[in-house]
Image (cartoon, rainbow, N blue to C red; front, side):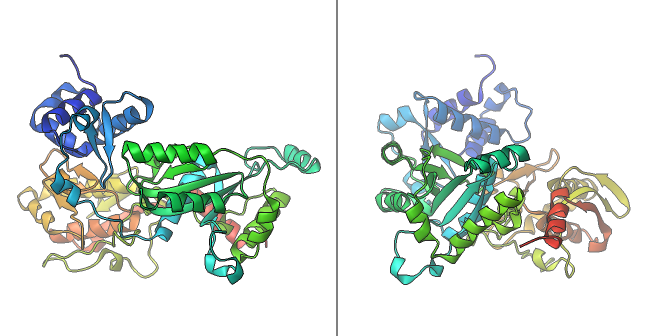
Length: 451
């Protein structure tokens, strides 16, 4: 057999292991068996490429050999083994737990997805602001609007207004932590009821039962009622996906929109749209904030994933307490850092952590294993086993891996913790960074805002 594709490698491993595996687990088994030598990938994270290839196979091919297992982290299995009755590892199934985060924790992930893929600005609707006589299934969790302002010339916008055509599109979103057979019908018809007023309505969840029977039923309901389905990926927001598209309605339900305005959040949303169209400028700060990807996946963002706390005896501080008063690195771009006067060029914040680890490994190779003592309340920061980390990155060509998916503030704190292990002070680490251009623009707009 010549050079293998990623899918051929995955199929070979799953056939031999006869159990569900994540893309990282598949890659580790392949490495242990020497199968990785048959792949010509130069990627630093080949298990990520492997996962993408399997996802694409399941999504695009009806005869794909792979199936997804309903779990966190996502694991894959072979359709042929499933059909021949090979049992799934029950110990693995017992490790699958219900999500412990709250539905409102999902709102920033949807704002991020809607901004990128629907070009929509969204606003959270607080149900407590509605009158009691209209309690129940009336208000969606989040509403959104697509404006043509950023895509059309001013003359075309004015022409559309003159003939009473603005070409805005209104969206309605219902959010759930999870979707399975126990809550599918209630969740789905709640979405139908709450989105009848909008151009498009979506049911959104982070955990969705991935069995064929469930997805078939979900597809049937989506096709019948025109409700789209979005699955949010909390580990990689860019991998959130539209499972089933919404059917767009050209005519809005004005009677329902009028009733929805009893909620002050929805009423201000409608007023904001009107002002933005009239002024031909979208006041982004008046909608739910759109966070950076690094902020969304930073530890502590979800209630189920608290901020890291260093616990070894040698270092007993928390990263969040390592910043000076008022110090923050969010919304910044880093260009370099200096360690004891030696300058290192970097392109992004995660490169700072990688380079700090590499420098400490080079200078203190015999003592470097001390980094294994650094960990958070629930998650390891370092390991010699990449399976123990969610986003492992190998440090140089060593046996050590570092968890590298933090936001800028956490990266600075963790980097300081690492150098402290080897006798450096936090002042030995100097950072060269600038505010992001779009953040500067938001600051100027905030200062010069109009109401």
